[in-house]
Structures are given as C-alpha cells and as structure tokens.
Image (cartoon, rainbow, N blue to C red):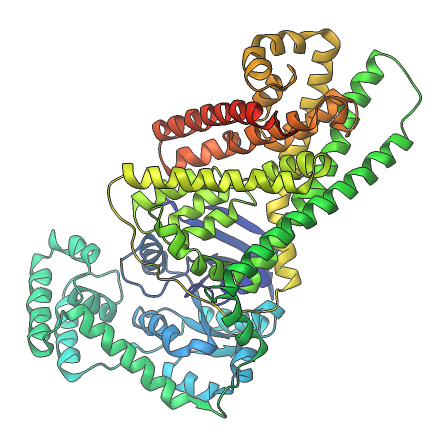
Length: 639
C-alpha cells in the first residue's frame, strides 16, 4: 500500500475550500509562492489511518482555462504533478455554476471526490439534492459537508484515500456534448493517440479545439499537423454554430451542468427570505449599506482604543507593582530597557494588534468583506481601480505585507501597481497601535479618527494622481458575493494565530533588544548625539523631542516598536512625561504615512521591482515629514 499521498483541493472562490483545508491540516501549514508565480501556495500535512498525506490547496478558480495565473497554476499542477486525488469543493447552494469546473476535472481524468459543501444552507433554502443520483451521473463519490463545523470532512478524506489507492477516475465519456462537437473531439483524439501525449486525451483534444494558447504552443513545434487539424475542426464548429468554438463548448458545458442539476435538484418549497437575506439587502443598499459600513469601522476604532487603553493600564500597573526597589546601572539597563520593552510590547500586542486580527477574521469569515468591495466599487473607479481592490486594502489594516501580495487579484499590472502603492499607505495594525495607543488613549479618540480621515483623503488624492500618470483604465468588477454566514470560531482563531504569530516570534524579541539598546544609548549619551544630528528635521520642522529621530529610524524595522520604545525613553508606558498632545498627534501622523516596515519594503520589491520600491519608499518618507511639519504649524493654533 502506498503510504504517501498527495491530495489537491480545487474549487471556485468562496466555496469553503479554506475551511476544508483548515479542518484537515489545522496549524500544520506551509505558506509560500508557486514556482515562478506570485500566487500564494498553501500546503499542509496530516496522517490519517497510518497514511501520510500532503494537502495542496489550489487557488480558487472557475475553470481550467488559461485566462489567469490562478487557472494556469491549477491546471498545470493537476496535469503535470498528477496528484493522487482531487477533492472538488462545491457550493451546494450554487450547484450549476460549480459543476462547470467539475465537468472539466472529469475530462482531465483525475481521481475525483466531490465535497458538497454548505449542505445545511441548501436545506434551509429548500434545496434537496439527490446525492446518489449525482454520484451516478458524475461517476465520482459525493460527500455532503458543512466544512466550517467539520461535518463530513472525515468522510471526504476517506473517500479521497480510497479513490487515490484504487486509482479510480470518473469515465470522461459520461460527458456528452452535441453530435457535431463529439465527432470532432473523436477525430482529434484519434490523431493524438498516434503521438505521445502526457495530458488526458479527451481534455487535450477539447482544449486544442478551444484554441488554448499554451497547448498550441506546446504542440506546434513537434506536431504542427495536430495544431492544423485542431484549427480546421474548430473552424467547422464555428461555421455550424456561427460562434467561436471556445464559446460553443463553454455553452455546452453550462447546458450539461444545467441538465444535471435539473435531474438531481428538487426545490421543496419557495425559499422565504431569511434574516440573513434581509440583512444582506440592508448592508448592500446604496444608503443604509454605507451608513452601516461607517458604523462598523467606527465601532472597531472605538473598541480597540478603549480596550487597548484599559489593558495597557492593567499590564503597566501589574509590572510596576512587582518592580524591585533596586538602583544601579545594570538594573536600569535590564528593567528600564528589557522589562519595560517587554511589557510595553505585551500591551501593544494584546491590547491593540490581537483584537484587531480577531475582528478582521470575523469580517472575513462572515462574508462581509466582499460586501464592502461591492459598496466601494464606484468610489474606487474614481482612482482608477474597482471594488475588488478594497479587499487587499482592508487586509492592509491588519498587515501591509499580505495586502501587497493580495493585490495580485487585480487583473492587470497597472491596477496591481496602483493598489500596491495605496496598500502601503493604509494604517496597518502596527501603525494603528501607534495611532490609537498614543493619540486615542492620551489625546482623544476624535483626534485618532481625524488622523484616519487625513490618511484616507491622502490615499484618495494619491490614487487620483496615479490614475492620471499611469496609462490604461480599470475593468469592471466581477467577483463572488457569498451569503452571510456565522463565523466559525475555530477558523477565526486559526487565522488570528497565523497573523499574530509573526509578531510574537519576530517583533517582540526585536523590540526588547531595541529597548535594551536604546536604554544603553541613553545611559552612555549616544542617543543624544544621534538625536542632535537629526534635530533640524525632528525639532525644528516637526516640533518633536529630539530623541524621536532615532525612533523613526528604528521604526523602519517595526512600526509598533516606535510606540514601545517611547515607553523606554519615558521609563514607563505613560508617554505624557515626554510628549505634549500636539507632539503625539504629529508623531503618530508621521508614523502613519511613513513607509510601513522592512517587511513591507521586501514585499514591495517582490510585487513590483527594486526601482519602484525605492521611489515609493522615498516618496512616502518625504511626504510623511512634509505633512508632519505642516500639521505641526497648523494644529499649534488649536491645541
């Protein structure tokens, strides 16, 4: 018996594929990029019934054509890497649309299992799917699942192991198109049988008839007669239907999917609008939708500000209560440097960053993020993007690094470049910690909100400028709009942990070390020398204390470090001792616009290039200091 299996997960976007993946592998995930591509690759491992299994989560796709990087990756992986089985995750509430991909997987001749997800929602809507009949038609096991709750997932992996070990594949001849198409598919298959073809014959024949550029390029060098035959047969189909062959075959697939659904689906009673349906209409309305979105965002800011301020006081009070009554150089270095850096870092992490990641996970898993993208489509077109760009920009509130990678969902390079630049200007959780933990706690929530408004106006203006400078135009928005669902606590906590873990592992030790270094520099007087050198910018132009120059330099590593290291300078988490309210606002404003961190710079270089990265970083640093100096002079009259 084969002890190592590779099983791929394939399916449309928002069908619960990530839920299946998380249920199977939990925290044992490997995140990277597909070779030569900028699309995220997820792998995980598990041992089930003594068999070691690698689970590969393919990008969410709607077909196996070569129209996007995601489709190319999924198709090439299945056809060249030959996974032992493919689990096709299907949305039971949108069966017809999902079967379009299923039919293509059957044509590829892979060992296949269907995970019929959201079966509970389908039943609630009065949709009764005959599982046995669907299995008979497709020739592949079908398992009803509710992946967010783990229901049916064990049965899915059991079936996948079974078909993988038996190498049982659905019979591709179960799929029949029109007579005139089938006749030409048979001719192509007879021609392909005479040469060595590594791909499934029927699938290859169909893709050649569809005019697949990648396959044509592969064949035209060694087998130009195959390409010529495909072109002639394709033109014959076009002549009969008066439509391009690719459109004809696509129509046939949808017609077949519709026919299958008619055979297996029964609507027991007209579905009454549920509370979720009514709330969806409310939250996407052109008036109430925007008001609700504003309320949600404002509530998040107020909650994190209040909770973070309270927890910071609790943590500082606890550590001050256990502070030893000892004096001396080494004690100052260890306590004012290391211990203050530790508990200040703990305050920022638990008070500001962790709750934000939990809230972001709830917004994602509930299905609200695509609604925000829909609402923001029209405003975003004014800056040369469409509403889909809203998703990576919202992710940027958590961290700018995955937001930069998330901009890959944009359809062309122009849109990706604009979205990447704007994503670096979004206040990430680290900068939010500075804004709320400094201004929100010590000056007032209204001033923190004002900083966000300034940043959003700045993002809009820069977007307008980039839209004018970079040639081209944005396309319309085409994206999945999933229904509202109750967030899964397990999934939200896992997502939160994977976002929060890098802070604990990398940022916290870095901040503590930096805090010790700064305390040592303060004791030796070195920090005063650096601060004096930078004082023309920090003191004269920005109106800040001289020591902030060093914080700006160190803040390039991690933005939250700037707030934590303020505590080191102050000797406690209370920064009122070293900064006035006006200085806190200016400092937070500069940090907010300033290039996020070294990790974001690396992500920018990966998504764009080093030249563009240098220009973006230099531009944002210059803009931050310019706006900070102007704000200092304007706000001095009000504070």
